[in-house]
Length: 376
Image 1 (cartoon, rainbow, N blue to C red):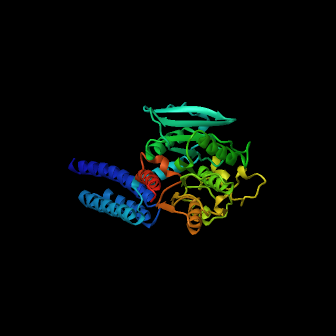
Image 2 (cartoon, rainbow, N blue to C red):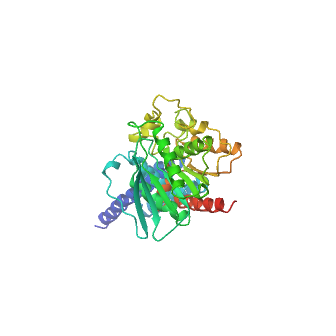
Image 3 (tube, rainbow, N blue to C red):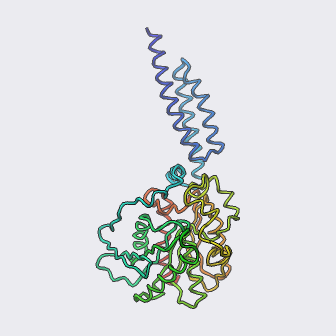
């Protein structure tokens, strides 16, 4: 009977041990992105399971604890060397599991402004405009937000949420978001025309160009750059600053990061589904020259461009777009603040509630805006 009890205890410990080992090893491989540390952990599963299965139960437990310590060291080492948060790495993998994240944007529920904010909807011709304001506020500042979506996706609720973040980052200023025309129905220069029209409309509403900041992410980031280049070229007073997150600034599919980060980018790389396919074959260009600076602003001349904040993650296929724009603008004498976030995915700023890097990015936006208005 005693022998059977020992066998039963050994078996239970074996099952529980293996389950924990598999879970921890999977976690380690996830965090370490299948590097050597993760594979070592997988090998230790096999060794640990054999020893744990032995009748020498306590010896097995000791080996199990040793294995856990090794995995912890692997994760800590990854944290110190890669400088990416665990939540950021985990969320990146979750995003990868939903690479067609925006596929159902047409079925979104109605969006309501949170307490303390009001939204005013209007139309500039056929262009829908949404103005978010703080209740009982008479702000002289405004942000013109140009949404992302590879020039094929309309305005979605995520950007209505982001409008609140922009308002909070700029002293509860007004935020105007436009639902510009998109491909394949409306190709270049439709989006650019709408963005320029919205900017001029803001000045007609009484906002000084010195109190306007243009922002955008992904395609919206590229559009923000193109819009500002167009305004300068046509002698329209320029905005106070431009903020771009992971800008799609080069519509050619030739940048090294397109291939180097293909397996790392959970949004626009591996699997390329939905709107991500536009990155390799954009409908927006039509028959126009893809190197036109108003289409691919990486080819623009940034002389006299306003202060520019560029944010990008190292795991994006659009990494080179952001870096190339920042370098070109800086070479032209523009005040540029470029920040690269290690291990981050495309437009990670939208996950500010979960990812520390997202919170840090929004803090940077707030500081940048404050410094710009302070003349620093």
